[in-house]
Image (spheres, helix red, strand yellow):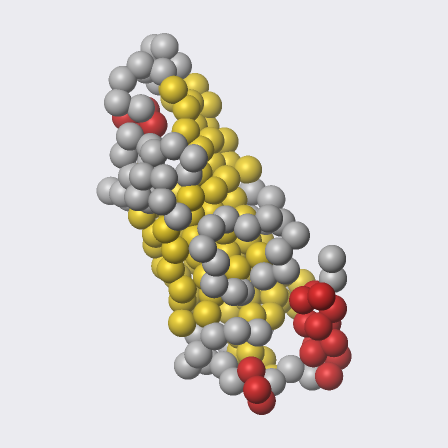
Length: 174
């Protein structure tokens, strides 16, 4: 359950062909990890839309005919240069979207695979760094670029010895 002193952080990324696109939300103003003050994510959401903020339509997938596209999005507590594996201890949010257009020119399939989205973290996910890293990538360019929105409900916390131990376990468990 989120604490009463929560606030929201957000960013939006616009796809760029097949390039990995990322942004780091600077949280250093809210934290002092050396003194045990960290940011804790209570809930995280990832959304997909056209770059005009509308729903995804067939023309976003292919210019004409049939075809399909996919995109992956991730959220990490460490800066990345590409999508990472689920075994990466910094990964705390991941979502994939798949869309296909049928011969009639209609969306025949849109599916979001949300292995970690929307996420509510029991006792929160501790961010022991100075940034939340958001990134997106696609194997083949969409006909129109997509916007991927990231929203986080967060609070700050002074870590107790027990919470420090939980953090150490989560950072080293694999």
